[in-house]
Amino acid sequence: MKFFLNTISLLTLVFLMSCSPKIVGDGEGVVASIQRGPCFGKCPVYTMQVYKDGKVMYQGERFTTKMGTYTKTLGSKELKELNKLFASADFFNLQEEYPTEIPDLAKVTLYYSNGKESKKVGGKENRPPAVMQLQYAMEKIAESPDWTLVKAAPGEGGNTDERNGEAKEEIIHSEIIIEPKPGTLARFLQDWDSKSVYLTDRITEDGRLWLIKYSTKTYTPEAMLEMIKADERIISAQFNKKLQTRSE
Image (cartoon, rainbow, N blue to C red):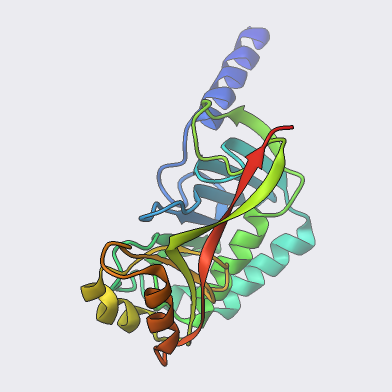
């Protein structure tokens, strides 16, 4: 009988770990979680949950180097610092949803529970610094090393790891990396919408660099780059580049 119960418990654990955490904060004992949704482009899509015992579960869905279910454990000091960050951000008094003017951006939803209260806060751009600081703290955990694979994802696209081969740089003339002045991105995109310019991805975690696309049928790459550089809201702009691999 004892063997039978242990077998049932093991099967239940395997089943639960193989299921994608569709709801942010879903699961008993979750202290904090982050869910990054899809965008118009190749943004990482994943959910990560931190439990009160320090266990962390990561579910990578698209465009992330960790595709599938992974786990790791935070030390007591790291867990304490994370709780301190949410407390100092006055998380329970933040808005539950921050409005967006850029539908193509990925939505990020944060969840936190102190054992008495729990709350979710979601949004895209134009979120207060306190929310962004929490997001970066959670993303830092997600991007840290020493994860253990629990269940691999099906062999589909989305993993950005390069394979063996010699790398060669190629300029992508239809894509431009911009560095806008703080707080000007939304208005910039609205003003440039008539020129078929649209946002595709955030390049840096701090929101400093962004990737935009446009149609080369309307403007030559050189003309478009010069016009964007001339915009007073743009600190810097350059063509995007990609690495091509060539097997020896």
